[in-house]
Image (cartoon, rainbow, N blue to C red; front, side):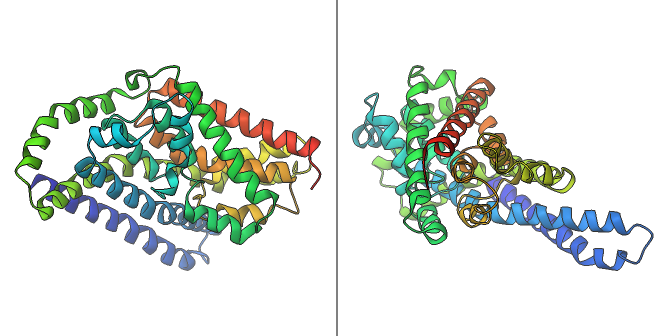
Length: 346
């Protein structure tokens, strides 16, 4: 009953937010003849950008929450131990490629990773999956192919993402215990999950009906959506504020520098917070303005780290772990983009 009331409240709050934004967007044209035309234009832009970011990301967060709920109910630690490799090299490689099985973007991957950790997932594999899945999944691979074809940008994006995700997973494998990387609230969920294992085993031994287990998975998905949704809204608001009020011409004006162009597009990827399923088409518009290395860095760094995903990471991991992961992602993408600009002929 409690879960149902929380779900109802979430649905009503989300509906109210969407209707309010749409109503404001519809009313703003009537303000154009008022004494505050500049304000109305800025507000209209703000609402439009926010709705674009939120509507683009929300379905994937919902998908990730549903997958996380199904993992919570139907996947056991024994399953993870039996089927997933744990060696220091194969674990992060397999984790980075796990997006082919769980095709989720940077928003949906976070709740999935947290649930997998609760099932005994290796630390290195979880980090690699978190960073690699937003690109190394069938949906994003198809969109990148549609935008760039089977050219060097397509293969470069996949190879560099796999290299960085697996490499950062190897770095975190030096700390094999999730206690050092997960936030206290995630550790509390982990302890609760472990304390309930005997109850789960007992319930499975009595062969609970499929409908009952699906309802339990749905309840877990509701918890994940509630927990992550607020951070998505906050991240979307921050990204919208930066997009609306921070001039982007400064970034676009340095698009031909061998190093500055890479930094500029990495900063733009962080600010825009575009979903990885569609960012390839945005990157295609930069080809004639920025260097190819910068475009490649945009396609690699953006799905791993942006404003909304960073806030989601902080809800699951300790701040120090997030800082390390973000810094290594930024530096690795910068190094790859600069190397391409200086040494590779396209």
